Length: 267
Image 1 (tube, rainbow, N blue to C red):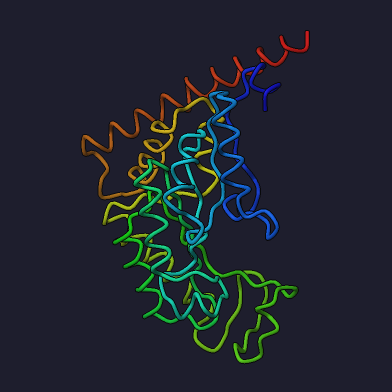
Image 2: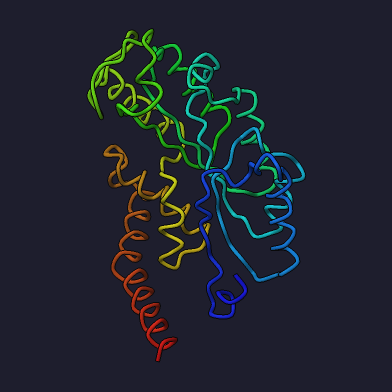
């Protein structure tokens, strides 16, 4: 990190599948890493995957001071029964607290959810939507359950799971029903001002030279221009103009400048 900082590389996406959960023999690992980054004072900006039940006042504060700007939570459901079936080892209450702490310490929070896991029904799905609307992560992704033969869930006989990939059925739902719920859920969330996005959106836009706030604005703009009923209104036109400027001017300019900088560093 020190060498990279000397070359101007200070933005990172920590790809550890769970940065906030230290190994059994070193549970304070994330806290100590954050303390080291604070001590080095390299002007880092980074994001990471995190578990909602790992977030604490101390760790959230350390992460923010160490340069973390965002956390990506795999919450997966807003229904305790489904979370237990998934063996997620966190509860809906944990999820509320994790999102709350991220917001308190100024950490952007993205939350992903799976629709259609074995046992899912319309009631559990609606509990997920209600959780999102109440907890208000900064961005949200609803994704349909995907089946792979070499995953533990496929071997649980009581689920009566059949199919592969995005085409499947089980005792309580099938892939077509799950897909319809995803569409309805996204429509409802957009109507209620929830920003839809993916865990890759922030790293992608910041990698193209945008600030965190500009990246968030871009995701909101993309949501807005996808709403046909908003076409022609002033906010819609402003969103279109911002996106056009980024696509035609800012992104190409940044890519060119970045390429020239790298070529110069190896000259």
